[in-house]
Image 1 (tube, rainbow, N blue to C red):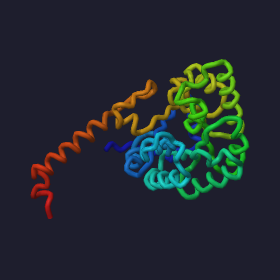
Image 2 (cartoon, rainbow, N blue to C red):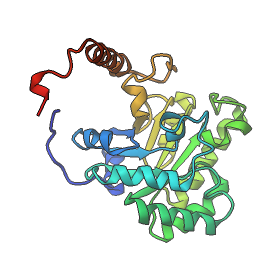
Image 3 (cartoon, helix red, strand yellow):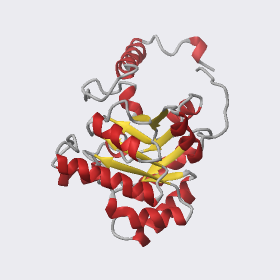
Image 4 (tube, rainbow, N blue to C red):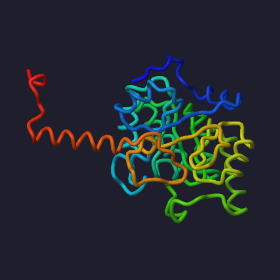
Length: 271
C-alpha cells in the first residue's frame, strides 16, 4: 500500500482556503475501519460516513431505515483509524427535521460518541434554524441540496433536480440561505452542471458535487462504487477506478477450489 506524505489534519477552514485558491477537494464515503485505514494513507481530503451505508452495508433499499445509533457505530469505527481527513457524518432521516432540539440532541450525540468533526444535513431554507443552532453550539454542518435521498418518495424517485425554472430558483435560494446560516460546505447531488456552477459562484463555501458536473469545488463518490464492487451499478455520474468486485469474486472462487481439492492449507500454513 502506498504511503503518502503525512500532512496536518484537514479542517473546515482548510476547505474554505481550497475554494479561495481554486484548488479542488476530494471526498469519499467510508463506513468501517478496514477501508478507513486505506483512506487514511491516501491523499483524499474528506471522509463522509454516509447514510448510504443503509444501501451499501446494511442491505436496505434506501437510506430511510438508518438510525442515529447505526451512524454512531460506523462513524466510530472510521474515526478509530482515520486521523488526517476531515470526517463528516450524515444525520439520518427524522433525526433533525422535527425540531431544533432534536437536531442539537442527535447531532451532539454523533459528534460526542463517534469522534467525527462535522455532520451533514439534507435540506434548504426549512432547516436554517437547525443549522444556525448547531453552528452556534460548535458543531460544523455540511449542507446537501438537489437530490436528497431522504426525500426520495416526495421527489418521485432518484431523478435529476433543478431542471425547471422554479426548481432552479428554489435551489439557488436554498443554497444562499443555508450558506448564510453557517454551513462550511454544500453537497450538490444530481443537478444540471450549469446550475451547480451557478451555485458554486453564488456562495462563499465550497460545493461538493455528485452528478453535478466539474464546476463544483470538489467531488464525492461512494467508495464501493468507485472501486467497482457492483458491476451492475453504472449511473452516468459514476467513474469506476477499479473492478474489485470481480477481483474479490475470483479470489473467493480460487480459495474454494483449493480448500476442496486439498491444495490449501499447505505445510507452510501449519503450526
